[in-house]
Image 1 (cartoon, rainbow, N blue to C red):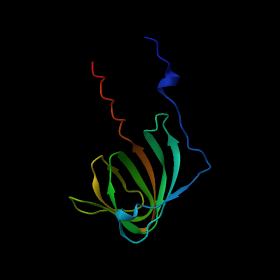
Image 2 (cartoon, rainbow, N blue to C red):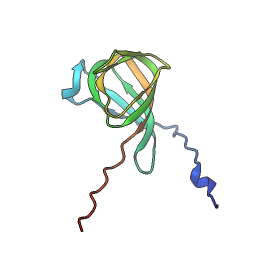
Image 3 (cartoon, rainbow, N blue to C red):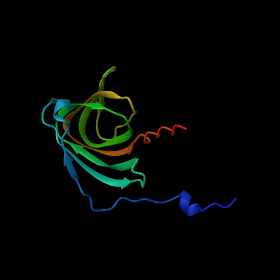
Amino acid sequence: MDHDATAAMRLHRPDVIEIWEESVPPAERVVEGSPTFRTAVHYEAPDGRLITGVWEATEGSWKIAYDEWEWCRLRSGRCVVIPDDGEPVPLGPGDALVLEPGFTGVWSVLEPCSKDFVVMLPPPAEDEPDAA
């Protein structure tokens, strides 16, 4: 069997220059404060489904609802993730977690925070088969 090793393994390193995109949560999701976000994408897969980077947020709380997978590790700051159906999960520097599709709750930033993230978006919906 003939394999192309270069096609199976590639090394991706983020660029040194970070381009930041600023945003805010939708007003209807804000629970407390006026949180703001900054995101720097370091890598996006050719199909657009896998994204990695750094995300920063200021103090405040907002409702979250995931349809994607996210792994993240807090670099700095303090926050709490509060599942709709569970106990609050406090996070500080070095703490990591995975949020799965279907997760809902509140993200609350107690001190400005920064996190590394890896997001896997859901696959595109399959087209309905043609009727014969």
